[in-house]
Length: 483
Image (cartoon, rainbow, N blue to C red; front, side, top):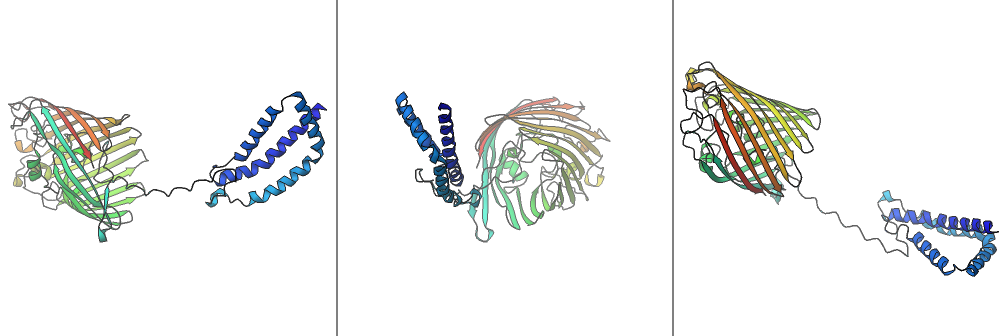
């Protein structure tokens, strides 16, 4: 008898669960589980309460007799209840239709979904930056027929201390504004543009420090870069003052892993005026430019680059540039030797997780041209590796070892001093740059050393009061914010 009673109880429980579960689950899916399982939970709580109240032996016997009397009608009742519940469940739309079923009477109605917030403007790819700094989220303003124009900027200051200053009268310490620049651009549609304006400083290893005023007036003015861009699919044309295709470092401090530009960068173009064609074809990115090279205002230089994205982590790039003519101009922005040279790069870039690793090789050469004052030909071979590792909480560390060596057909001819430390000399440098970034704010420091090799003791192109010291150590700090 007892065995039959427990069997009856089990059948009754299974019947009740079978009734409540389908409707309860369908309602939970339709309203995002807001009321899912509420009916089953209520039933379970009531059963536990009744069981506790009737836990005495007499109570248990009364419930057993009652169950035995009612057992014969259990199946009929289950069928009746199932029939009454089925229509309600079949009227509930499925979740992937995008509508919610009405909440059950005993559950609170689900709150209506909030309207999605408007997406914030994404960070821009220009000006180009190698990291770990990045452009701020742009400020968008309506501009009538131009649509939306995006504005970003940077304000930063710099200070340094130098051991064995350059013999040309450099000071032992400096402080200045490194960047006070604004970038205005349009990045959508077939007609786009970019404009960079403001003050800047370009510190370079082994070269005397120049304040903002002389830097701006002797180099690229208060509008160093700016161009129009016509876009059609994966092809575009840029016309104006363009960032160079050459090298693996950009021009301005905030664009790079290290504050100071390196020895290899000092052989490269920075800003060139001209026309550039760009095309992306599958994994290839191609660029070709006709420009004025080292800001010479003579449009006889041809530049090109070919980048192959091996995969999402690895990229290989080849760059070439040469002056098809000749030019006697010789200024800070347009050095005679480099402006009449050919220069090539082979660059490999690895980017994954917290790592950026980019080794590259560089070769540049200038031929003898006595008509424009180049008495002997010369060339350089150089290589560098750019490392950056991002730690937690905004900290990162960048390292840059590099070596470059020049060769000349005439060691006694100062016009073949392509490297700057004298004909046929070489130089090694190492730079370490720890940095901390918080939102738009950053603070970082360079610790760098330059060592001159193969030095001709009869010249005074190195460091120190007499220009014969072969080592220079610098400490640089830069802080500011992107906005």
